[in-house]
Each structure stands twice: as C-alpha cells, then as structure tokens.
Image (cartoon, rainbow, N blue to C red; front, side, top):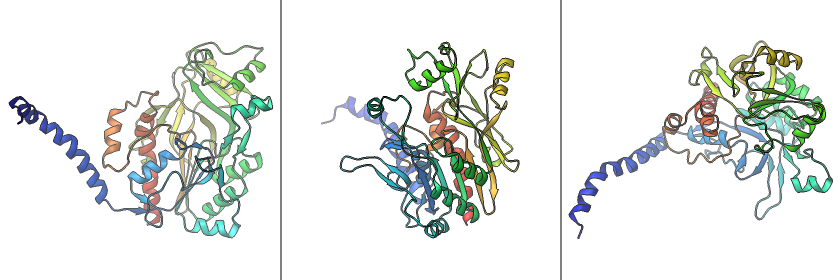
Length: 392
C-alpha cells in the first residue's frame, strides 16, 4: 500500500517528471521527423591524437544535428570519415589514411563526387615527451603532418570545380613546407604573416604549466635570459623562431582577444557582437574580394601598437572570412575554432543549440563550450546550410 504522504508527493512532482520526460522525448521526435540532407564532405585532419582528441569533432556534431549525411544516407562518423592520421587503438597500430596513394585522376573523381572540402588541421602528430627525452631534444618533432602535394591537388580540383572549401588555423603553418604554403595561399587568396599567437591568463611558469618549455627557453635566449612578468599576456611566435610578448594593460587593454563580428554580413547575423577568444590564432592578410565575417581586436595601447608595427602586424586582423568561388565559396577560420576537447553529448535533439546557448555565458572565456554554442555552431551551421542550398 502506498502511504497518503507518498501519494501527495507524487501528485506534486508529477508535472515536473512529465516535463523531464516529455520535453526531451518531444525534442527527439522533432529531430527524428526532419528529413536528412545529403552533403558530401571531404575532411582532412592530420592532428588526431586519440578518441577524445579529434580536431573535427565539433564539425561532425553540427553535421549530425542538422542531419547532413553521406551519399549512402548514413551520418558522418568522426572516427572513420576523414583523411589523415588514425591513432593506435587497443588492437591496432597507428595508421595513415590520406590521398597519398591516389592518382591525380582519382583525386579529381573524388572531388567531383563531393560538395565541400574541410581542412580541419594539418599540424600533425609530434613525437612523445619520452621519445624527445631519448633524443635529447626539447623541440617538437613531427611524425606526420603538413599540407602535401596531394592535398594541394585536392584543393586545386575543388577550386576549379567551384566547390566550397573551408580551411582552418594551421592549414598552412609548420610543418607545411614554404613551397606548399605559397601554393595554398595563392589558391585561397590569403597571405600568412608568419605569426601565430595565443593568450595566456598567467605567464608565470610556476603557476601555469600550459606554457611549453621550449617556448620559454627560446624566449629567454632572445631576451637576455629574462622571461615575461607574471599576469595575463599574449605571446606571438614567428615561423623563424622569433617570440615576442604583449602584457595586459601595458601593451593592450582587452584582457582576452575579442572576436568582433560584422553584422552586415549575413553569415554573422546569428553571432554575438563580441566573443572572447583565448586560444591559438594566426595572423593572415586577405585579398580585397574577401568579406570579413569577424575580426580580432586586442585594443593595443600606444606602446603595444608600436610593438605590433615592429612585428609587421596590423591593428586588426581577420578571424573568419569568405569569398565566392563560382557556385561555391572559400572560407578561412584564422583560429583553432574546431578544437573542442569536451563531450557535447548527443546531437539528436531539436532545439539543443538554443538551449545551451542560453545556459553558457558568452563572456566566460574559460568555458570552451560557450565558444562552441555562441560562435562556432551558428557560424558553421550557416555555412553548411549555404553549401547545401548552393548544391541544390
């Protein structure tokens, strides 16, 4: 027999239990009834370090949520549907699955069947700390990575066939050779300045262990044995090995680099005006026919502006840009936008982006999911929907 008190309690909580069950169920049913949309995508990702360290995970979450599928009507699988490095599993050795064994004709045919090319990351895979210690080196050593001749053939064909191309941070930097980078720049209409940068909320290496040892040692070699003072700051690293730092309040006034979006650009209409961005970015110059979706602003002081000029860097630099490519478009994200090292959960519920966007403060730069829901998802979903409409 159920006691009277328990009956009263059940009556009181039953509306909440119904909400907890019915709302997710309704959300799933709505997602389920929406039709699938075929969008054939070639993803290149050479920086896959393990099951939870996949640079293209964010993209694949968006693809499944929007119900974009492969040619066979299956959803994309982040573990198998990409070209690049496949790390060792419990019962397998590391494997490389890329374009290297394909002829130019085979690459051409592969592009003909595709609608969009996504270059997620070509930084690659580095030797482990143990391997470096054995060799007596503290500098990173590449095992696999960089844009190669076949990747460029893929991009040439994609551009020639007026496909949509999305490329992201480190598509053209080290370990890509300068010759391959130059061809990439010519294909995309970009010019890398040679500089990459990153924000650190604490430059004291006793407190912050995210600062690489080689970076600190190289900086000290160039600055009379001194490291930067404690507190927040920006570190700029040039491909030639030069390292410079900008201190918050001394050299710039926006504590965290801000991404400002151009609302007059239709791709930015669902983006916040300002999003803090504390991760890696590269400084690129763009051809005039590019449209700026978003740009970086660090708000330099007069001293900081002089430092930027001394490095050959502009006051503002692009974060996300786009330009037409016949029937398709070319896009470049000048930041490590797709690198979301957290589990977003199931994508098979309608309305999730709206819900999570409201629960993650756009101003909280320490919350990596906040950047995904407030910036990456609305931007990438717009681009994918546009590519699908261009295909139709």
